[in-house]
Structures are given as C-alpha cells and as structure tokens.
Length: 318
Image (tube, rainbow, N blue to C red; front, side):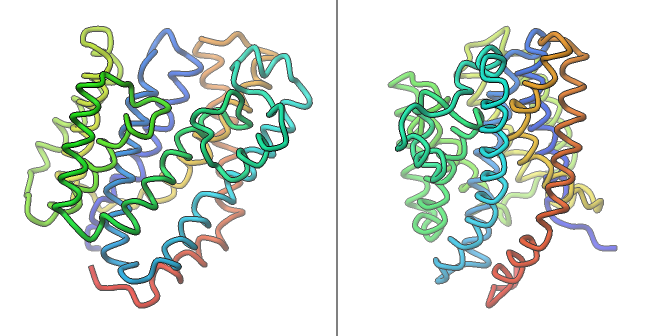
C-alpha cells in the first residue's frame, strides 16, 4: 500500500481537539493547551485551504464555497441547536460552566449565531468555541478565493500580520488580525511543500516540541511567544510530515470538529454529577462527546460523498 501524504493530520487534529477539552475541563493540568491547539488549527487551515484551492478549485469559486459550506455548517447547525436546548434546560448550569454559554438577547444575535458572522466578538454564544469558526471563514474566503494564486502576496500579508502581531502586542484569541499570521504561515508552508524536504526525525522532534510548548512552556515564556512558536512548529510538522505514515487517520480527523464544537454542551450535563477541573470530569465529558461525535460523523457521511464529488470534478492531479 502506498503511503498517503499528510496522513498523520487526522490523528494530530484529534489530539488538538482533545487538548482543547483538557484545557477547559482539567484546566489545572493544561491551562493554555487550548490556545496552542487553536493556533495550530489555524495554521493547518491555511495550509489545506491553499492546497485544495490550487489543486481542486482553481477557477471554480462556486464549487469551493459549496464544499466549505457543507464542511462547516451542517455540524455547526447541530451544535448550536444542541447548545440552545442545553441552555433552555439548564441555563444556570450552562452559565456557571461558561459565562458565554447563553442565548442571544436580541433577534439579530440569533441571526449572527446562525450565519457565523462576527461571533468572535459576541457576548454570548450557543456554541462557545465557535468564535474560531467565524475567524476561519474570513480566511477561507481570503485564501481560498484570492491569495492562493500568489506566493508573493501571501508573503506580504504574512510579514504584515507578524509586524502587527508583534508591534501592537495583540493576542490572537478572538482576533482576526491577531490570527492572520498563523493562516498565512500555513499557506506559505503549502507553497513550499514540494521544495523543502525534511526528515522524519525533524517531524518527531517538532511533535515533541509542540507538546512540550503547549503543556509546559506556557509557564516559562510569555504567552504570545509560546503561541507563535506553536504556529511555527505546526508549519514544520506540515512540511516534515509528508509520507510519515501509511496509516489512514482520516476518521479520527473527522471527529475533531464535532468534539471541538460540542464539548461545552456535553460538559453542562456532566457537571450535574462531577466536579469540574478533575480527571473524572475530563474523561467522562471526552468519552461522551466522542460518542456523540462518532454518531454524527457516520450520520453525515452522505454529505461527505457529495463533498468528494464536488472536490473531484475537474480537479487537477496532485
């Protein structure tokens, strides 16, 4: 069996989603791991959007938009429906667990939540982690429809975003401008993926450094530096992870998205029986959310087949 390029990504993305859950539900063990996971997700998104735009959707913007919609919104709609039900049943418990986990106060707030527009700044969310999706959508459009065509433009935007991130001393969290460098870094990694050859030893060293940085170094170095370092390490993983394994971890990768979106709502029910910030709370919420995520991924498999047809139609060979 031939090796699949970047086959490791499925397992790595699930690891990132689990890191977010640890950060939220067993915070004393890994208080900052979630930030590192999100910045890694952003870098991976920049890489993958550039890759598919160049290889599958060049000159096909409508197909690109359709595919992204089917990737993001069906699961998201389930997540906010589940979140709304949870808030309706247990409003005080939901608020106690996460102060953002409330229903919008105005009708336009619901529209904003449904469309995923600007909820990175919203005071309440039906799915608390969805702020990152509203940022991702901006860069899906910018990279997938515009900058994937030009390595030079990507370099210019990457350098500009690094300067702003450094000089303005802004956090990437809940910030389109603060997150931009990670997306453009991932995009640049895609542009150079066939030109830079790194060994498997580099991959394993980078993976170990990422784990160390996410789980230990936030205690030792400034947060913004640690987060930027995780983005850089992720780019190295993307460049060195080609053909690192022939094992197909695609299904694990599919679990990462619903796990990321649904864990707060599941945590509300777990908090009725267990105390937060404990291994018992974390592992129970993780197992329940993974079970729900598995069911959803299987249920939505027909949509994946539609996405595959859209992606494959008139695509260029890789």
